[in-house]
Image 1 (cartoon, helix red, strand yellow):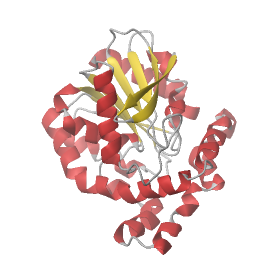
Image 2 (image 1 turned 90 degrees about the vertical axis):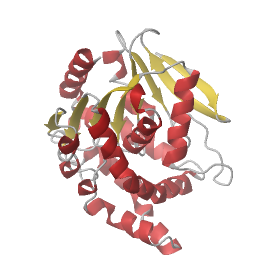
Image 3 (image 1 turned 90 degrees about the horizontal axis):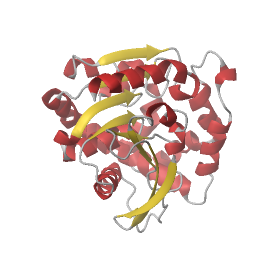
Length: 283
């Protein structure tokens, strides 16, 4: 594995890369509040055959964290940066893994060049309003009314307790979880100014909901081979958000695993072979 940084649209973007340079490309798009580090155990399972690229978004991991006055932390900008990164790396066709924030980032990227997408792996990443349940109520209130009070109302999501909860909730055997995972994220969130970056992204997430019909049209029109592997006990992205994909992607494969949000942490032995087999058949 190589750990690289390149400048895209004036920003330093960090990414992990492994595998043969001429292999089919698999782009791994991380979620909140982690980074490409979340794929540390999956990458070696794919890199013998596939060119695996896992970037960090600005404000996450080792990518730049410019001041909010100098950079708009939006999913549109994230998609543009991922597009620029792929162009720099000479990638014209790719499969992508969409998890959490990686879903709207990846789907926005796909809209910029639908013909470039060879396959999708969807893991607890939403494209349907059915999946925005109780966890999202304070965030929806913030979308509806951008006031200091509503902004502060979502700040508890950034707490150490909530970060640990994202990893542990819905997991049957907590001894399978490496506590360094949530310590990694807690450390990132504690960086000066990062809390306001994350609050800006919570606000901007509402713009993704307005694009759900376009995401769904992309699914129906282009029908990329799709694997849906989902932690069925996830409180943030519950399985109500997984099933609607089958309306627009009737040939998609859906697997619900007995775990929570970060299923690669305790269910890699189940999810890894599913992902590898899917890619081998689809690419």
